[in-house]
Amino acid sequence: MSLNQAPLIKDFFDPETWTYTYVVYEGDASPCVIIDSVLNYDPKSGRTSTTSADEIITFVRAHQLQTVWILETHAHADHLTAAPYLQSHLGGQLVIGDHITSVQTVFKAIFNLDERFQVDGTQFDRLLKEGESLTFGKCSLKALFVPGHTPACMAYEIGNAIFVGDTLFMPDVGTARCDFPGGDAKNLYRSIQRILSYPAKTKLYMCHDYPPNDRPVACMTTVAEERIGNIHVHDGVSEEQFVQMRTARDKSLEMPVLILPSIQVNIRAGHFPEPDANGIAYLKIPLNAL
Image (cartoon, rainbow, N blue to C red; front, side, top):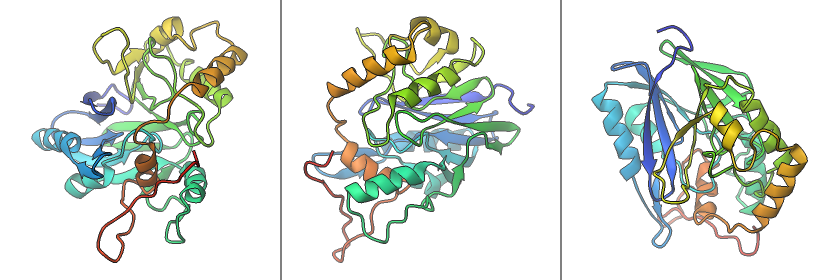
């Protein structure tokens, strides 16, 4: 397999958070990457579990894959990452875009985190810059900086596929919100246009699907399908029209159920806060802050 040849892609769907995780690889016994994993979390009890992550571990081991990179498209606000758990079982390095430092700075202030929490991205093993590439076996991955949903979003181009994170959803769902700290609808529109400038047959893999009208969940569409049918940003929708729509729509949306635990864990690369003297780790709930 030559660099950038179409890889094999295995998707895993977490029904509790409507999240897709991907394992990308060449074939059995090859190196692989894992994108946007899920640590299951019960907000009523504060308990975590590893059902979704264990499915990935089972698959990787069954196919004798060697995990090289465990990637995040951004610091998710709707689910906790299982990256450290996967790393402890499969190896690999934890990776995110280098603009994560701006997200860490904002949320360190919101959660009033102490001096032990650094805002330099060192919780991750590797910070990717725009246009930077990584290899795994004979495959290569290119980082695409696509801010808007958050100021630090990355998409990952692998072969003829782009893993878009929350930049786009399936055409009948539209686009991601931009009202979290640092989000910007103009930037999102421009990031989307960058992705939609790729060839029509380019495959786009979603991080989430929220299907309307009882259709089955789906993880993949194409540039052509998005340009024709995306309900928010199809061909002909101007930046001004998109910003007006996105701004009005975001005002009507509730906060994600798991935003408070997710952000605090995900800006730490999935690691929990240091335990208190009693051995228990705690998360904070800021009142009237978001």
